[in-house]
Image (tube, rainbow, N blue to C red; front, top):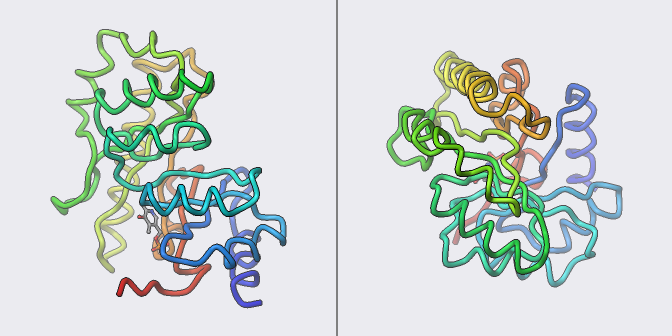
Length: 223
Ligand SMILES: *Cc1c(COP(=O)(O)O)cnc(C)c1O
């Protein structure tokens, strides 16, 4: 099967220790099952409704990652099962994830999304906002969430110098935040960056989690 081959090819090219999130958005549950039956259990979706539908249909030991923009009023639908939320972009959202996770006695892992791209359309914190959020250390009291690192998306461009520069910046911010706020937190160690077109660069620049969709499942049709 082609998508199984695609997955295996990508997996074998990844540096050891880099986690692959297979981004299955818009793709049918059968495609996911095919990869699952070949031993892959980590999948990412960017829409809450689609994530919930697939969670309900598919084996319960799949590790689900929410990679898209998450509205706070929808956290309640995924809090019982989601493994890692990549796109936390406000303190308000972090607090709501904490509250909802508590109801299930779970700890939901989160990444803070940083705005690294030149484009204005991408969500995320800038570094000043992160400092404001972390400086008073109030976040330490949120014990049903665990901040595990950062996530970022590079500019959509075929100028790979720009892309590399943005990934370098994200890594720099990671190191800065690690030193300033998370030095004693072993769990703050993840850098989610890299998609189909740019993951080899992202890995060279220190990515620990890549989110790959179209190179595995083929291109998406949004109609
Ligand atoms: C769709 C998506 C991806 C995967 O994109 P591909 O180019 O298909 O690999 C990765 N990250 C996020 C946040 C996405 O929305």
